Image 1: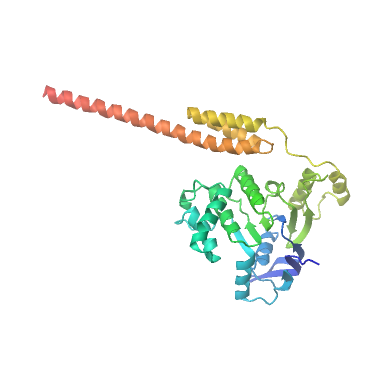
Image 2: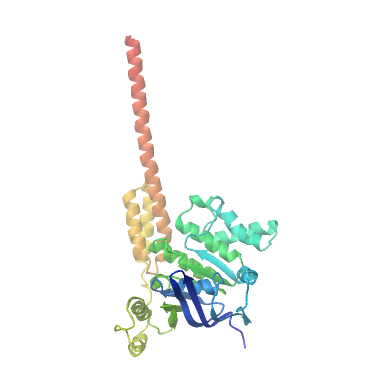
Length: 361
């Protein structure tokens, strides 16, 4: 019988302070395997980040046991945990944890240096992974010159280069807008096949389209552990609604009963809008914004891009978004050139006036 990659048995974590003892997580029983994309969600203070920290060895636990490929970690010391994280865990953080003075290439290369990969082999691997995350043209830019979305792409590339089987993500879209958040999660899903992804998120809606499993935490305990299928007759909207109820409503208030949920789950899952119209229109306006360098056309491109996010035209929309950004840059350059031309003309005029004055004198 194949062993679980990770298994938690009655795991409990307490926090002690001068004010007393606080409960982090309580008697958590979970198991995880490769190939899962797990979203861990819950209201603020529910224990979702504590759970991730305990799983990844960033924090200790007081009761229960955690097994890694069948090995009990109960008696792990500091060095044991360091070796465990080095072998099994790659981290992606909300605040990126990149070295600002390094380029995207150098930040990703660090993961390979840590693995002891020879220099002559590192370049190809770093370039390949940066191409996969769409940063082949930005790899030599310092982190300070990258956008939030680009920084998170570097973090994903670095995590994938570590070759660890588990990718731990703590609120990785917290600093990003909704459109970029969805783009980042989709990228992570596409590039992490065969790995176990543990994604802590306060907003399940941005990740549920890519999750294979959703764990809802409440008061330090696992309230629900959902298996999410994107291929059968599961009503995803019903699942979202029940999760929202669990996040926002206290247990003593009315929530959906299991029978009501079971009835709703019989409904065919609503698919993404098959229309590509919004994506096509956003691409057309994006191209026009480049041709004419027009600010208004760029704004229209962005609006159409947002509408395309939940349609089959979303990939076209992402291309259009980049074109819209380029259109705004061209517009700014036009304005700067116009200002420069006006200044040049004024200077010539003033020089002419000075010459006339000199001739009169």
